[in-house]
Length: 412
Length: 153
Image (cartoon, rainbow over all chains, first blue to last red; front, side, top):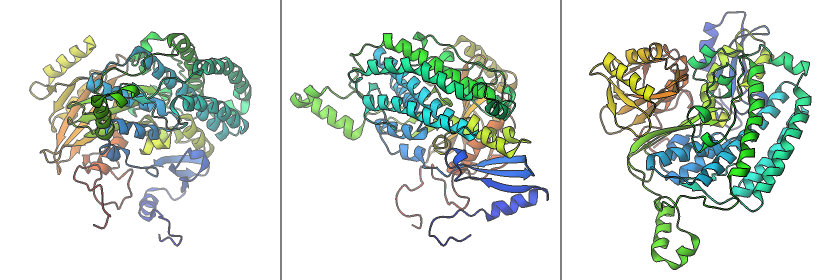
């Protein structure tokens, strides 16, 4: 298949030829995507259709593959943090958290309690922001346009808070090995308090748009079912697994970063369908808001935010200008990075989409020998054929939206 | 560490004496398993011990050591919240038995390891490249894959 435009055109001729041999004569192969607004990124789904019925739905991925794992092998440990933002770009903070916890575990670094709580704060803010984007786009896929504008507006408030703390809206890299990049800005807690005061009010107004809405319920109930056995067999984690009734939330099961000091419950549903997954996420947003509420009283506005361990922490500014050793230390940390003792480690956190984990092998140098991201969407997307089989074409869109995939996460 | 995991590990070592060897790690119990008996160990952990969730399959390249690759399997017990890591050493031309028969979710990660490392999984239902184009030459995550220069060099 030649291209006259000069752009790279993938050659599907082999694939189409082999699949044509397999299919029955009365079925039809249709490509959904890769450039389709309902695929939430660049995902191609190869649909085999018998009229309006789906016989098979195979996701074809790799359009966003950027080779993060190879790139990371030539970056220092601190620089790798910037890659984690770009994996799941709607929930950068939880990716940051999984990565820095992994490195800290390998180096045995103690992080101050206050920094741990601030990490919890931003993880939960990110979770709400990520679920807001999911809510808007998912409901838009089902035909309700207006909610998207409202959820994006509220997400903007969260992005403003992230920007105030880290200086960047989308890819903050705010967590650093050993603590945080900066302390919280002045007036941050007041902003958060205001946000938490508003949250129930706008959640209520959102719910009037989708709760008891027969059009939306009709399109979610009993659609795209994954049973608990199937979910476990296909390595599904996160809200998708909790919608099958399995109580597995890493924040409760294996608390990290001070989550054991917070009180919250884990929303569970047993419906196994798109409707159950929908409500698990909506209820999770309220639980996250509850955790943020506790953060208000737990975090002092000013305090330590970085470990005192000079192996990873930069020396304070005032020392750099007056102290030779501090200057050398700063220079070495910035230009060469810090060495990490030989070994391997796996650390995971509960991201908005499931278990986000990092497996790092160190050879004792300042760069990771192997840097592996266990991204939840990659595994969750494998269930597409199960969810879509024998359903309607319109329900394929529901299925993609209901498992909340992130293509940056899938293709890494 | 969780006391329950110790009893699981003791049973595992009693069941496969001399075959599984524990290695020292910081985070979770790790075992080296020989390539030939790996599948029976996995089968045992899934059916008898309840490690129903396969979290990840990944490869690490230890070039120029021989055998060259190490396959790492992260298993999870979703009821008791136990973790165990199994490692299998695989040479450059040695195929590894696919675990898709035990955990279907291994499908894509095994394809990924094939795509980026060139490790062949026997018994995999659809072992093709997953990220890269089908006509791509070489396996990018290998340590001897060039990171600079043109493809034509």
